Image (tube, rainbow over all chains, first blue to last red; front, side):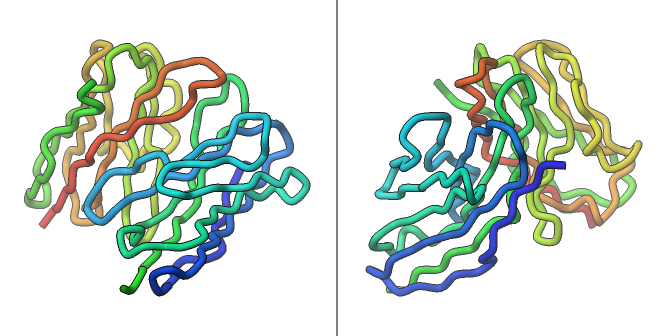
Amino acid sequence: AQSVSQHNHHVILSEAASLELGCNYSYGGTVNLFWYVQYPGQHLQLLLKYFSGDPLVKGIKGFEAEFIKSKFSFNLRKPSVQWSDTAEYFCAVSPRGGYNKLIFGAGTRLAVHP
Amino acid sequence: DAGVIQSPRHEVTEMGQEVTLRCKPISGHDYLFWYRQTMMRGLELLIYFNNNVPIDDSGMPEDRFSAKMPNASFSTLKIQPSEPRDSAVYFCASRISGIMYNEQFFGPGTRLTVL
């Protein structure tokens, strides 16, 4: 069965620190990959997505993610975090084609201190 | 576009009562998903529909849960009878079909508390 693993459950950073959140998935075929963000008390919003092409994907608010097929990874990065980035981040994978489920990771709670 | 609309936003009920959660997907979207989010279990897919037809309900916890989609613009998730362990945030999401468009758009959620 497909699964998504997010290695860091809680991350605490100071403002201006760099961020990298790990995401690995298990699926042998072609996939679409997503990072969603959930700000406190809000719904999930799409940060960025990868379908094909350049494995380095840029999203909103300065976030980017790199798809490394050989490592089944899709890590999220931001060079300098802000207090407003405090949120929970979810990695998700969807096998390409007619299969329509998004398989979510457990999420990573990020707290940024000013 | 108003996005995915859910109601109510908050629901507090007593154990044993029936609870009905409602969702209006984005117009033109032909897939609709119901999720449950808890601290212990994270984000779980309960059921999803395509063109108003339930496709996969394997995530529905038990017979107390049921979901319907009578038309393309409305879906309900019903819990009868409700139990304290059903307390969670329930999200509805929708998407349009097509390989390149399987991004899901989430509603604001319904926070359910069962006392």
